[in-house]
Image 1: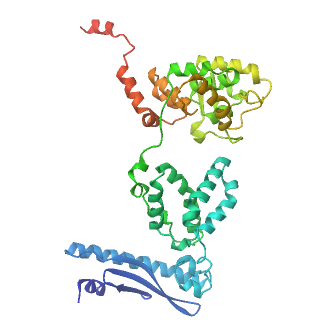
Image 2 (image 1 turned 90 degrees about the vertical axis):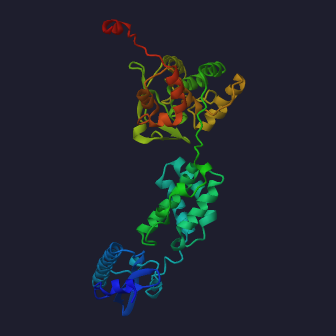
Image 3 (image 1 turned 30 degrees about the horizontal axis):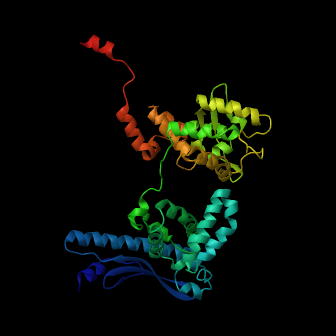
Length: 417
């Protein structure tokens, strides 16, 4: 008799349970009757470890006993549900072939594509407009071509790992994570609906499945220096100059600027309340939600820009900044970029960077002036300085190298020495 057989022989197994020993595993199965049919299902399956010492044998024995306790409890729940006529085979064993026997085969034909299509139909009502648009792109352009015909019960972690690896050859980590969000949502719902017992995404570590190049940040901080800022603004006029002056000297996002209303500006106390943004013509909260709400101090260039802007829009509309020729609020960031930003950059002769660099330029300008980093984080809508270190670490280090203490300690030195 083998060591495994000897261990199994000495373990008490309750009625309705069976321990089955194979070459490399020990499984615990339960027996019960349902609608006159004798059913048998595997509850646990444990790999047989090396049993080199008495301690190894003791641990393995305890593990098997735990499996028995779990299986016996599972069987007890099933018997109770059968007696109360609330038992549904597919709720407990959705992948069992006996589901077909009891007429519970509706899950078998459900594909990942079916669930994604169902999600597509309601995503507009579940998410904000810009988020819904991104999810739709991820579903139709990335997920459907690969997973459409895969039965959801047959979707395995290896299938998702293969997709992630292939995508990482041409995409960054952030893009892959964003594209996986709709898949994560439908698999979570499938678990809740008892279509599957567990989401295959739960067993995946994304950083272990993508190439190292994909993990490198696609973020690039490429700010304008103060001379470039002055040159760019000198090639702007009127309302375009006012909005980009405000952008350069507040660090506000484009969506926050085009969504800014006059009621949010407090000239008396010298701040702008940033608690809203406009994305694709729709007003919403800030990009980072409640933690992004902040009071931005108006530096002198901003005060002058907003005072000038008042001559254009203060009595016309709630929105501060308008399209200069259409005489109505900006609709989205693309409109502002095409109409106001690109022509001015071209005229200035400055190397082109996108408008978001106005935010980075403000941050780097403040860092160069050795402004308090916690204050700066608050102005940008960050919870702490971790994000500053991540994005502007090199600039902070350079500023530190140039820093000179502001306090004159000569009087202290005289007193000590």
